[in-house]
Image 1 (cartoon, rainbow, N blue to C red):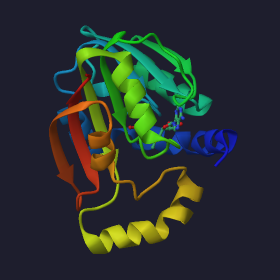
Image 2: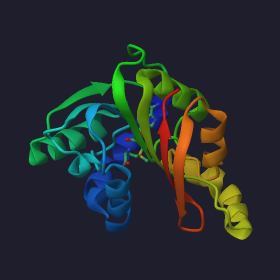
Image 3: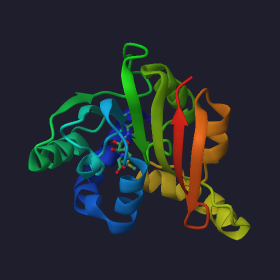
Amino acid sequence: MKKNTLVRKFNKQASMYERNSRQRTLGMWRSRLLQDIHGKVLEVAVGAGANFPYYNRDTVDLTAVDFSPEMLNSARRMASELQLKVSFQEQDIETLELPERSFDCVVSTLSLCSYDDPLAVLNKMNRWCRPGGHIYLLEHGISSNRLLGFTQHLVNPVARRISGCHFNRDMLQIVHDSEVEIVNTERYWGGMVHLIWAVST
Ligand SMILES: C[S@@+](CC[C@H](N)C(=O)[O-])C[C@H]1O[C@@H](n2cnc3c(N)ncnc32)[C@H](O)[C@@H]1O
């Protein structure tokens, strides 16, 4: 799918993401994932800023990137409501260049489903993070339940066209194949949702 088509798709979904940004189950996972985060943090594909309530504004120095201007507008509203200081960048993560080893932590929630090459993005995240720094992932992908997984493969082409996301990626395998070192993983909702704590190598 062309990048400008994808950006338009996500622009249209921004108000929905803003409304759902405090969804309870996701909120519980976001809170669990990010409970110890501090320092210089990069959040890729920030969307409507749904993780912002889980950052401590006294201990987190946040840079947030997304290629959708409407998502960034929603995220700016969330940051202002929480009085969280954020440096926003409107950029495509897949082509973005940032100084290597310049962040203490990198966060990606529900973003690896949308890139053309999620493995390459994870490896970029690994390089943007200082060695031993933390990489926090909350991602959805193919279920560990075979019937559910089969259904996800079936609906993926249509779901991708509508939402811009892939629903059948083997997220754990992608993270295993990347340069990051996995520290801990948890799996929920029929194995479709992953919380992954990793460190940069
Ligand atoms: C499913 S939403 C998740 C938003 C947010 N991270 C969350 O947890 O709610 C995916 C987000 O990724 C952004 N995105 C997708 N591909 C991107 C890319 N190549 N570069 C930058 N942002 C991208 C979209 O604009 C959208 O905001």
